[in-house]
Length: 284
Image (cartoon, rainbow, N blue to C red; front, side, top):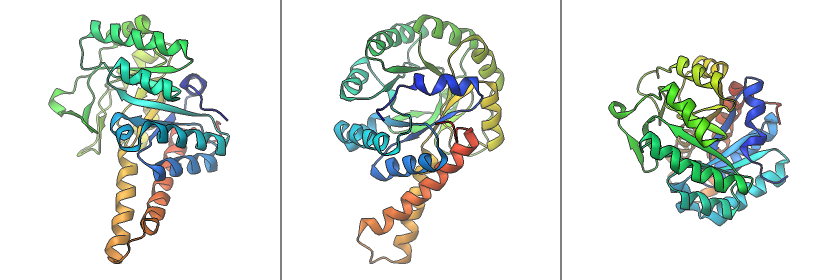
């Protein structure tokens, strides 16, 4: 099955009150763990790829892995640029075979964010590629992105609705109290913001910083209108802990397969739990 745009995944999710998981692809084991979990749960999913991951893996290898997963599984899978920083980066990914891109203009003023996002939407739509936009400032650290909690800014519902109306994005990430990375305390999610925006626009809300959010908070967010949830840090933690356990138990291990195999299994277990929590199991 070819890669699909998020428009083949997210409208159904919003209508039926579940969320599709975006699981970041950082190497082959992340790609394998995700598709293996999705096959067993019969779930659609989104491979998220940051610019940092693109630099690490190479765009050709990234696209090839995603296409191989889609061919092997027969599942509806989107390959999505996560936090794209520019029109040029988005176009590079589209030309390489990505089925979806995010343009993150949240650090610009509203007017400039709208103008720049519109350019990406216009070009992507001509290629059948979906686009995610972002409004507000999501705290935490992801790749080279770092936002102090004090600088995080909740999205204004009226601005979010206007942003959608003027850009026509296919899904919208808004800052509602989550953060990239793991939480030191429990996140305080503003469900009222999610509800106000989701009720006013036809496309789903995206929840960034899904790692470490309590299960009940995830369920309430989905009921309020979230249709896409991003997870990366929990998989990184599971991967690293599994590798560390193997190497601490036997410092003479030098075959990467000996520690990457349990790392892949640990991530797969996390992803299966997330798929069930998001309600996307048996929705492929």
